[in-house]
Image 1 (cartoon, rainbow, N blue to C red):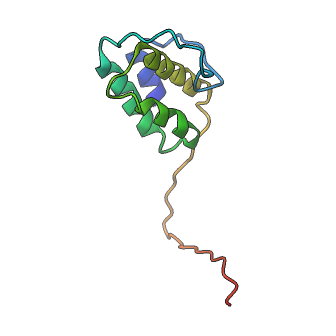
Image 2 (image 1 turned 60 degrees about the vertical axis):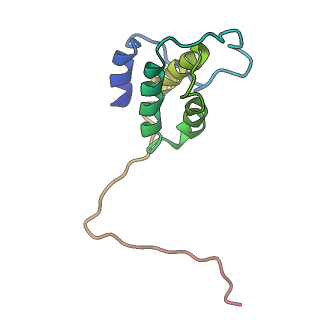
Length: 114
């Protein structure tokens, strides 16, 4: 759901998918220019943070991108778009939350009684 909305919102409907959420370190070092409209970056990262509740594999990348919410650079926006391409590649991955009519509480303990 988020990926379909995001690809339209950020003009990425025809983007290629990626197998890695972030580029290797050192690849985009020369893109230090300021992002003209930081609101777009903040909107994108906010949506990704919401998605992380069902996708633990996104936790590191989403947290990394959220570090730059205050003053995002052009390279951070490119990394966030790459992250969307990774999500496109991995749409079938995630946690499924279901409901049960009679919930059962199960607890475990690692004590030896001594």
